[in-house]
Length: 267
Image (cartoon, rainbow, N blue to C red; front, top):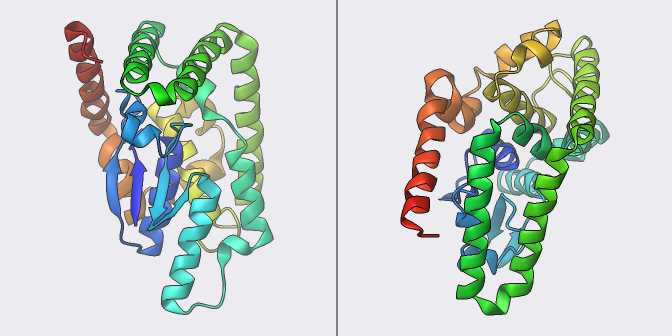
């Protein structure tokens, strides 16, 4: 089994947490979207959306995050001959879908300093153009990625898009706070794949230094967040890269790579 992912990718974090929690062995392939590695023709030919993660088991390839998580749970059930499937419970499914409905892209990009965001965006557009020349048979799909990049920049200029994303997040966190006043974890008193879906959202808020606004004002979320950060899966998937000072090398490495390639005009 292979997983194409990156530590910065929110959905990649969800899938890796699911793999770690279920004890599933897999081969890891880092594909950094901020350096344009997701646009390399070898990867792009397999996945023309260029979205992460991508899970492959033999000839079976899955792109949807929830589908991947459910597939992982089924692997565990078959391998251990377990009768129950937590991802099939109505409540777990509903929470996973509710969390997945929040689009983190506009929220994340809007909280990154504009000069860095524009710099990386221009670099990535040049990467797409370069890959288009290398693989003309994929030109149509690469054109769609260019269009998507320009549309994203346009959305970021409209403050209403950020407002909608923030309101969606606040509503989600209010529901989470209410649920955690009744249960230890999101879908009951046991850790489930619903928690796997939520943890990266809280980690993204923390990475953007927005805890005071979105987490600290919700005591049950604060308590829950401190508990789940102690799980080995969190430490392996997120804490290893983003806890405390660790986030700086992770982000600076990417920025330096992009800067050097940009200076050398090697896209």
